[in-house]
Amino acid sequence: MIKVNFIRTNNEKVQVEVPENWTLMEAAKKAEIKEIPADCGGSCSCATCHIYVGNAWVDKLPIKQNSLEQSLLEYEPGYKEGISRLSCQIQLTKELDNLTVSLRDNELL
Ligand code: FES
Image 1: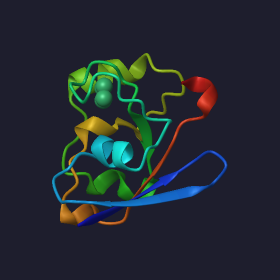
Image 2: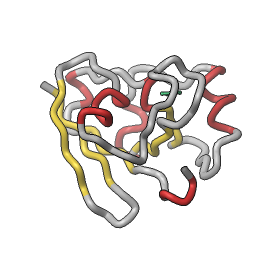
Image 3: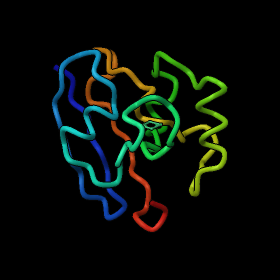
């Protein structure tokens, strides 16, 4: 099992545990994270699963942004170069146990 921590803008932490190889978006859905509606169900076409990866984790992610993900994110309100990612594109491997990501401000949703 892989632990993931979601940090809300008010610093509330929501921790969830999911099986290895789930996506970060699937972990968010299990934890009922309202800031991640994930409207397209993970097909990399809605960008409503936008999160910010903690600085300590950016280089540990096994998959870097592809051009489709990058192009979706660049038009998203609150886009932050280097740490913005689509959570449906991040697969949770054991190296990512205890991954911590920040959620966007509700006003951007
Ligand atoms: Fe739609 Fe990630 S769930 S882009």
